[in-house]
Length: 143
Ligand SMILES: [Zn+2]
Image 1 (cartoon, helix red, strand yellow):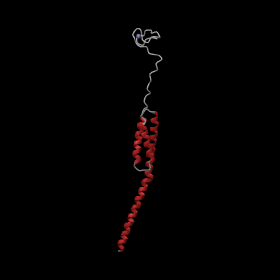
Image 2 (image 1 turned 30 degrees about the vertical axis):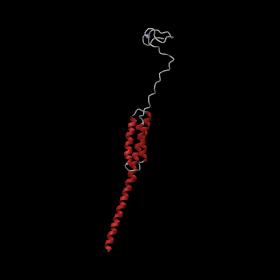
Image 3 (image 1 turned 120 degrees about the vertical axis):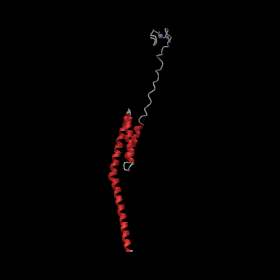
Image 4 (image 1 turned 90 degrees about the vertical axis):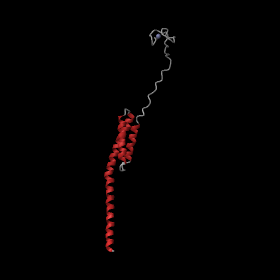
């Protein structure tokens, strides 16, 4: 073989170059261990987006809370989608869909059930209050 440094021929039995003294690499030596790159921990934000999306959908019947979790879910998911990591991207896309679906459900629930329910309750309360005051007027007249 030939020397890596000076290029002169080295007989196979020699351990060093006779010209420059450079040690000859041992062809039987184990190949240097190449450390695999550490797994990117960049899918945390995507998982947070997914969890927020699930929470938004689960809590969509409650007034207020889904708007907070849905907004956070969308922000985390969009941040997760921006990451160059296929696994995190899948979780982030799911998180974004769930967040939007949860927000949509919570808006529908608010307008279809919560607001009419509260309005009906307030109307009933007003009705009860006016009957009580009407009763008071009647009682006052009876005295
Ligand atoms: Zn040499």
